[in-house]
Length: 129
Image (cartoon, rainbow, N blue to C red; front, side, top):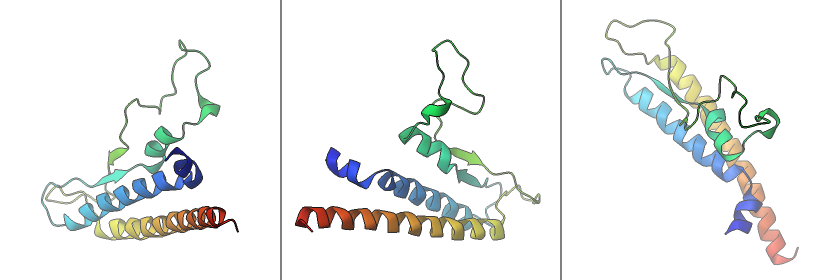
Protein backbone atom coordinates (compact mmCIF):
# COMPACT_ATOMS: atom_id res chain seq x y z
CA UNK A 1 0.00 0.00 0.00
CA UNK A 2 3.00 2.29 0.52
CA UNK A 3 3.77 2.12 -3.21
CA UNK A 4 0.23 3.30 -3.99
CA UNK A 5 0.51 6.14 -1.48
CA UNK A 6 3.79 7.17 -3.04
CA UNK A 7 2.27 7.06 -6.54
CA UNK A 8 -0.70 9.22 -5.54
CA UNK A 9 1.50 11.72 -3.75
CA UNK A 10 0.07 14.43 -1.57
CA UNK A 11 -3.11 14.68 -3.65
CA UNK A 12 -4.89 11.92 -1.72
CA UNK A 13 -4.35 13.72 1.59
CA UNK A 14 -5.18 17.09 0.04
CA UNK A 15 -8.50 15.71 -1.24
CA UNK A 16 -9.44 14.55 2.26
CA UNK A 17 -8.55 17.94 3.78
CA UNK A 18 -10.46 19.80 1.08
CA UNK A 19 -13.48 17.56 1.70
CA UNK A 20 -13.33 18.35 5.42
CA UNK A 21 -13.09 22.07 4.64
CA UNK A 22 -16.18 21.89 2.45
CA UNK A 23 -18.04 20.16 5.30
CA UNK A 24 -17.10 22.98 7.67
CA UNK A 25 -18.22 25.63 5.19
CA UNK A 26 -21.49 23.77 4.53
CA UNK A 27 -22.10 23.62 8.29
CA UNK A 28 -21.59 27.38 8.45
CA UNK A 29 -24.09 27.95 5.64
CA UNK A 30 -26.63 25.61 7.25
CA UNK A 31 -26.40 27.53 10.54
CA UNK A 32 -26.82 30.98 8.99
CA UNK A 33 -29.92 31.69 11.12
CA UNK A 34 -28.81 29.92 14.33
CA UNK A 35 -28.36 32.42 17.16
CA UNK A 36 -24.85 32.55 18.68
CA UNK A 37 -23.41 30.17 16.06
CA UNK A 38 -19.74 30.91 15.42
CA UNK A 39 -18.50 30.43 11.85
CA UNK A 40 -15.43 28.23 11.56
CA UNK A 41 -12.77 27.71 8.95
CA UNK A 42 -10.29 24.92 8.29
CA UNK A 43 -6.82 26.29 7.54
CA UNK A 44 -5.65 24.13 4.64
CA UNK A 45 -1.98 25.06 4.95
CA UNK A 46 -1.82 24.21 8.65
CA UNK A 47 -3.35 20.78 8.18
CA UNK A 48 -1.24 19.95 5.13
CA UNK A 49 1.92 21.00 6.96
CA UNK A 50 1.43 17.96 9.19
CA UNK A 51 1.67 15.68 6.15
CA UNK A 52 4.44 17.52 4.32
CA UNK A 53 6.58 19.49 6.78
CA UNK A 54 8.53 22.36 5.30
CA UNK A 55 12.15 21.54 6.14
CA UNK A 56 13.39 24.89 4.85
CA UNK A 57 12.01 26.68 7.90
CA UNK A 58 12.75 23.96 10.45
CA UNK A 59 14.74 24.66 13.60
CA UNK A 60 18.40 23.82 13.15
CA UNK A 61 18.82 22.80 16.77
CA UNK A 62 16.43 21.46 19.42
CA UNK A 63 17.09 24.38 21.79
CA UNK A 64 16.19 27.07 19.24
CA UNK A 65 12.88 28.84 19.60
CA UNK A 66 10.12 27.75 17.19
CA UNK A 67 8.53 30.24 14.85
CA UNK A 68 5.62 32.19 16.34
CA UNK A 69 3.03 30.85 13.89
CA UNK A 70 3.85 27.19 14.56
CA UNK A 71 1.43 25.65 17.03
CA UNK A 72 2.00 22.01 18.04
CA UNK A 73 -0.97 19.65 17.59
CA UNK A 74 -2.93 22.29 15.71
CA UNK A 75 -5.98 20.82 13.94
CA UNK A 76 -6.33 23.82 11.63
CA UNK A 77 -9.79 24.85 12.85
CA UNK A 78 -10.24 28.60 13.30
CA UNK A 79 -13.15 30.82 14.27
CA UNK A 80 -13.89 33.43 11.67
CA UNK A 81 -14.13 37.11 12.53
CA UNK A 82 -17.14 38.59 10.73
CA UNK A 83 -16.98 41.75 8.63
CA UNK A 84 -20.30 42.94 10.07
CA UNK A 85 -21.56 42.24 13.58
CA UNK A 86 -24.99 40.65 13.99
CA UNK A 87 -27.51 41.29 16.75
CA UNK A 88 -28.00 37.60 17.62
CA UNK A 89 -24.27 36.83 17.96
CA UNK A 90 -24.11 34.69 14.82
CA UNK A 91 -20.84 35.23 12.92
CA UNK A 92 -21.94 33.55 9.67
CA UNK A 93 -22.12 35.90 6.68
CA UNK A 94 -23.97 34.00 3.98
CA UNK A 95 -22.43 35.74 0.97
CA UNK A 96 -18.90 35.24 2.32
CA UNK A 97 -19.58 31.58 3.11
CA UNK A 98 -21.07 30.94 -0.32
CA UNK A 99 -18.08 32.55 -2.03
CA UNK A 100 -15.64 30.51 0.04
CA UNK A 101 -17.63 27.35 -0.62
CA UNK A 102 -17.49 28.04 -4.36
CA UNK A 103 -13.73 28.48 -4.25
CA UNK A 104 -13.37 25.37 -2.07
CA UNK A 105 -15.42 23.38 -4.59
CA UNK A 106 -13.15 24.55 -7.42
CA UNK A 107 -10.05 23.62 -5.37
CA UNK A 108 -11.58 20.21 -4.61
CA UNK A 109 -12.25 19.62 -8.32
CA UNK A 110 -8.69 20.62 -9.23
CA UNK A 111 -7.25 18.24 -6.64
CA UNK A 112 -9.57 15.50 -7.88
CA UNK A 113 -8.33 16.08 -11.44
CA UNK A 114 -4.70 15.76 -10.31
CA UNK A 115 -5.57 12.56 -8.47
CA UNK A 116 -7.39 11.14 -11.51
CA UNK A 117 -4.33 11.88 -13.66
CA UNK A 118 -2.12 10.06 -11.18
CA UNK A 119 -4.44 7.03 -11.10
CA UNK A 120 -4.47 7.03 -14.91
CA UNK A 121 -0.68 7.01 -14.92
CA UNK A 122 -0.58 4.09 -12.47
CA UNK A 123 -3.07 2.17 -14.65
CA UNK A 124 -0.91 2.72 -17.74
CA UNK A 125 2.18 1.59 -15.86
CA UNK A 126 0.43 -1.57 -14.65
CA UNK A 127 -0.74 -2.36 -18.18
CA UNK A 128 2.78 -1.78 -19.53
CA UNK A 129 1.82 1.06 -21.84
